[in-house]
Length: 114
Length: 117
Image 1 (cartoon, each protein chain N blue to C red):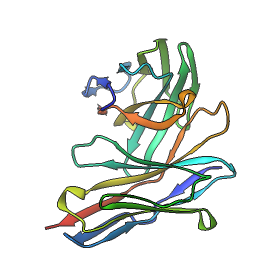
Image 2: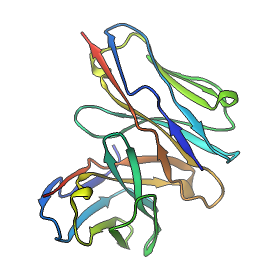
Image 3: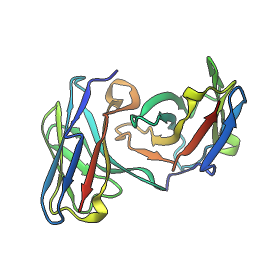
């Protein structure tokens, strides 16, 4: 199994509070991604990173920011959580620069915004 | 724009039946990758297979087989002699493969497969 961990695994927070989710990898993969999973939508890309300090927006980036100060860590921040951000969040890694195009996913974080 | 359609929302079969999960994709890229992932009730996402757009050879892995047809833009997944442990949500996904591409995945909405004993 790819070495990907996410923390916390579960979180309940109130509307309007900031929340940070952490993804940590031990595979030294250059690319990291944050997705959210919602019923009827599959997984949708929020933000991704193609290197330290190199990030870009995905399909559903509004209300989210990311940071990557080290190869192994990719942080997702909800600036001011809203109920529409209640979801399961998955981090993924890949190494297309090394010819490895499949993405490997972390265990997920279930976030509830009340 | 890229798009993946999994028209079957839910499928229910009895153990030992064969079942095919459909996946239809849209892309303007001439080079791309297709994937299948499994999400069991425990919630993790498990990578099953990657197929390159320039390789239309079908693949078999044990009870699993994949049929890739560029002419119909389909990448279907068949489970032979299904088992209860196959019960899961299955996702089909597509990514670009141009040089310098960021490998972003576009997912279908998933098919829930329930295998009854």
